[in-house]
Image 1 (cartoon, rainbow, N blue to C red):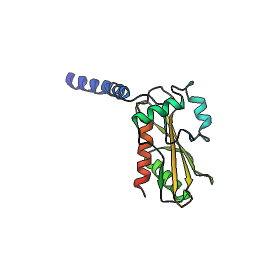
Image 2: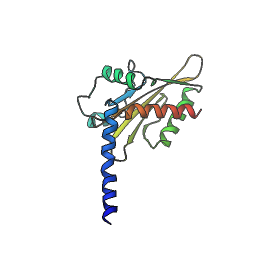
Image 3: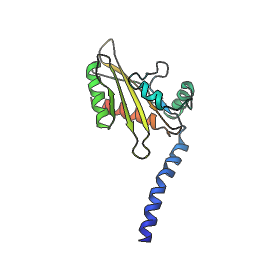
Image 4: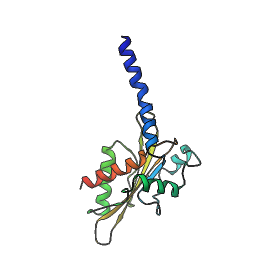
Length: 172
């Protein structure tokens, strides 16, 4: 019983240690976006973010952009061969499959806002996806993921953006 108890204790204690080791490899960004010049803004989640988000942010947008370009250089908008309405349906499907709580899916605008809550610590991270129709057909998908609370993300927001965009592309 003592060996089992020691194994369980070490296993549980190892989880935060592994998180901290991961956080040291990648800088804390606090947010990630496909386009920092036209940063997708939160609308529906703005009040919730205002009430819970720590101020001031850890990095300015320019500092986050520079760190993101260094550690996640391939993170950028994607284009897909779907109308904005069909692209929005696909985004909603992907976010539901990834267990996001959808905050905004209705309306004629091509915007989706959602929240994901981490299992271990219960941190809330918000995403906003903006879909823009392209002149020749198809759509451009831009996205932003931002933490509400906490100064450490270990690149989680950038990884989240990359995973969501990959899922959208693979669903075509």
